[in-house]
Amino acid sequence: MTYLAKEDRYSQMTYNYCGSSGLRLSAVSLGLWHSFGAGDNYDNCRDMLLTAFDLGINHFDLANNYGVPAGSAETTFGRILSSDLAAYRDELCIATKAGHYMWPGPYGDGGSKKYLLSSLDQSLRRMQLDYVDIFYHHRPDPNTPMEETADALEHIVASGRALYVGLSKYYSDDARAMYNLLNERGIHCLVEQVRHSMLVHPFKDDGLFQTLKELGMGSIVFSPLAGGLLTDRYLNGIPSDSRAQKSEFLKKDEITPELVDKVSRLNDIAQRRGQSMAQMAMAWAANEPSVASILIGASRPGQIVDNVRALVKPEFSDDELNEIETILAE
Ligand SMILES: NC(=O)c1ccc[n+]([C@@H]2O[C@H](COP(=O)([O-])OP(=O)(O)OC[C@H]3O[C@@H](n4cnc5c(N)ncnc54)[C@H](OP(=O)(O)O)[C@@H]3O)[C@@H](O)[C@H]2O)c1
Image 1 (cartoon, protein in one colour):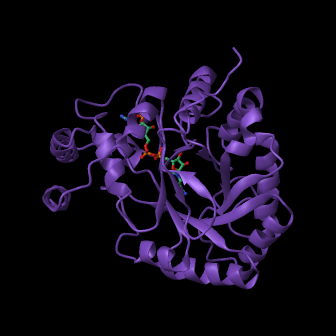
Image 2 (cartoon, protein in one colour; image 1 turned 30 degrees about the vertical axis):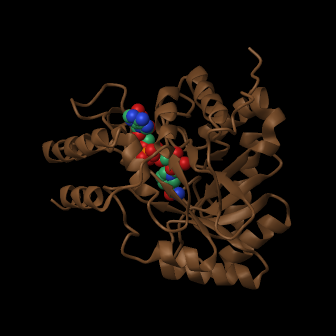
C-alpha cells in the first residue's frame, strides 16, 4: 500500500540543535544496527521505519557494517527509502559510518582515506542515495595519522558525499584533536556518538560531554537501554525473540540474577515516575550537557512508540537520582 506520512508528524517531537550548528535532530533517533538485516522480516522493518517517521523521528542512523550480513541494514533501508520515503528525502537526516572491519585486506578497516572513501561509496550504492547527511569515523584508528582521517573527512564533504561529519567513540583528547584538524581544513565537526547508559558509560569520567559542549559539537548518546538490559524485557527470563537469544553483542550470561534484581528495583522507580523502565533509562541517558538526540534500537514498532513517550518526562528529583546511583553502585 502506498505510504503517506501522517500530517501531524512534527507536532509531538522535540528537535534539538546539534551543538552550535544549524542542524536540528529529533530528540529520539532510530538506529538500524540490529533488526534490519537480510534475515529480518522486511514488513516489520518497514513498519518500524514508517512508525518512527510518523512519530517525528527524522534521524536514522546506519553504518557500513550494520545488519547480518554486514551492509544488509543499508540495503534494507535503501529499499524502504525508495519504495516509501523517497518523497520525504529532504525531511530526513541519514547517517552512516565506516571505521570497523568491513572487507578483507588492508583497505577494509581503520581510518585511511582509501577505506573511508570507498566504504562511503559502497554505502551510498546500498542505500540508493546521492549523499548522506552525516558521515562518521566509527572509531579512532591509532595506526592512521589523524591528519589523514581529517583529510578524508574534508574530501567527503568537499565532494558532496556528506553534508556533515562526525566522530564516534573518540575520547575527549582525541575528539578535541580531530575537531582542531577539521577546523584547520574549514570543516566544523558536527557531532560525536557516545555510548552512554545507566549500565555502560565508558566516557562518563572522561569529561567528553563537557569537551563537546565547549567545542560546539553536539552529542548523540547511543544504546541508552544497554541493548535491552535496561527495559522490562529480561525481568522474567530471556524471551526467545530477544537480542540476548539472537545476537553476539548481548550475551545471555550478562543477564545475572544480580542484574535482574537491580533492573527490577530501577523499574520500581520508573513506575513511581509514571514511566516504563525503557523510558526512564532514556531520560537518564539524556541528562548530560550537549545531548542533541538519544539513539535507540528496536525490534518492533511498539517499542518505538513506547520510547518516544520518554520525552514527556518529569525532571529527575535529587532524591530519585541518588536512589538510582545507589542501586547502580551496588
Ligand atoms: N557509534 C557506535 O559505535 C554505535 C555502537 C552501537 C550502537 N550504535 C547506534 O545506536 C543504535 C541503538 O543501539 P542499540 O540497539 O544497542 O540501543 P538500545 O536502545 O540500547 O537497545 C535496543 C534494544 O532494546 C530493546 N528495546 C527497545 N525498546 C524497548 C522497549 N520499549 N521495551 C522493551 N525493550 C525495548 C530491544 O531489544 P529486543 O531486540 O530484545 O527486542 C531493542 O533491540 C544502533 O542501532 C546504532 O545506530 C552506534
